[in-house]
Image (cartoon, rainbow, N blue to C red; front, side, top):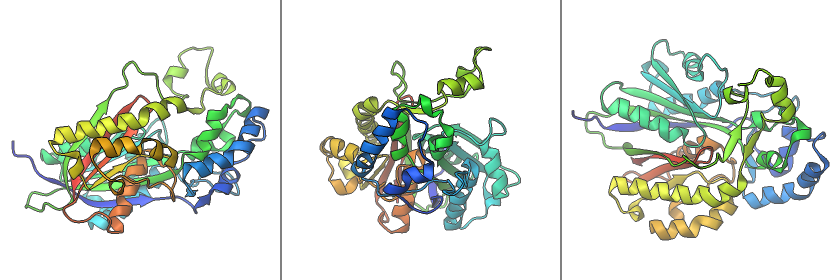
Length: 371
């Protein structure tokens, strides 16, 4: 079978609401008035220091600061990014044959968020898929669309990732007496945003913006989960323990193993990049841009020497890019790529590897594109 080249025809991003500076994070997400005293002390004494040390100066939340209500859900935020990508690609939504959305959660248990995004875009007929994933959702979705287009099944696909961290971070979501320091600290790390890509078949020799390959790898078997959020089937197995008990115990809270992330996330991301470039049969030093998921400058500075040494690159090829938008989880790499495309940072003919590591069960995923 002759495989059809696939190109990125458009990129798009969306950040909800105004920029929130560090000193406004607690005000927008709501006060932790009922948290245990030690958590209040932790927030008061270390909150600002952790925010400043993280290197993020502003971020965005889909939260009305006056009412505390959410201003977007997963599909409505993805729609905004998708329309920007479609505009760049110069195509109408009705031309889409495949719509894929990835999210860490969903708007409803059913119907799928992908069908809701399709409806919001006004697409009457298309294939749609939803990929339930955190930071590696973009890489997984690109692989699905890339394989479907290059084998001729579809001609045009939309990929969107929507990160709605604040739904888990608002004070109203917590059973505050059951909070620990991790629950409070995540409010200073995560942010909201959505990114989108339009992929198209390129059968007529147009080699610009061409996807070279994709990579998806999970190494989580036997490793404890690095990020958890309760509330689904595994927490509702016993008739005696349902939603009221779930809330009472605080098991619906979003939680992360910070020690495991600090120890494992960057090395696994680096190994994923090495594995990917090995698969591509290229010298990693020849890659012009590594567009990766890095949540804080502290993690960046702690681990960048290993990246520079093993990949044989300089700092200008792998940058910390979350300082103005915060860490938007799975949407981060597409948000960064879109900014690079729109400001002209990525030049014609340059090779970029867009790659992310996910701590939920330890995996990496991404794609390579020759711009």
